[in-house]
Image 1 (cartoon, helix red, strand yellow):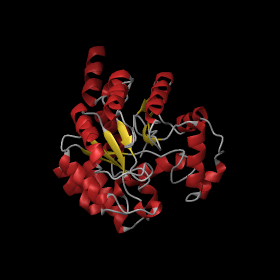
Image 2 (cartoon, rainbow, N blue to C red):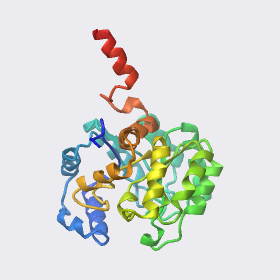
Image 3 (cartoon, helix red, strand yellow):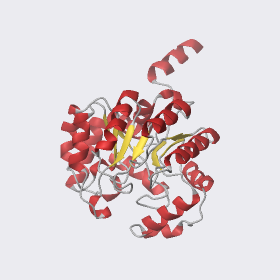
Length: 300
């Protein structure tokens, strides 16, 4: 199958140098191939690696590790997106921040960031923490996507967030939610169709899942079937520079292997993410078949 018409890496971590160094040190423990990537790699170099791999747009996640960091991180994200029009940055905040409402207002009304990202394990909070309820209510009203890290509980040595995440979906039915990593290893792939039908605002991010399914296994077959039926609700990224393989080109090959047809590859590679965050954040999108037909007729 040939390459998709556009490629959006839907899960990237462009961050400040100390955070990049920390992230690479962390992933080296699980993926030794990342010893090939310098701890001093810069954002510009990471962008270059992704561009070389054929990436057209980057969805970027950078979240605070403690209270008081959120405002500067969100402003850093805004500057990054302003300097690189192909980077679509998401905001974040920490549950320990005092002015959560102000942070949301600035992130959306002032900085026009695309959505919010939370990592319950690394940020060390319970998804249903009552202090986060006003945050979720506001984000639900705003209508922009909210990404949660889910899955890999054993890797973090912590209990799964499965129950709290599913309850979140029930409590905030209007929230547009992206389940990063698809609750991998903590929830059966066979259970997703029912949840996708039940929660129309739910989307799945297959980042880091494709790398860990044994070829020819029953789980791989289940995921292929899921992609075939629900690719319009699924995205895929690399987690670079903290993914499951290096160099980054290796990770994009996985999407080709798991997609059963051209339509699902286009959805997973770019079309679903465009629908999630909005066409206005992407320039020079491929023409739809209808648009191609109209353009052809106008030249005839």
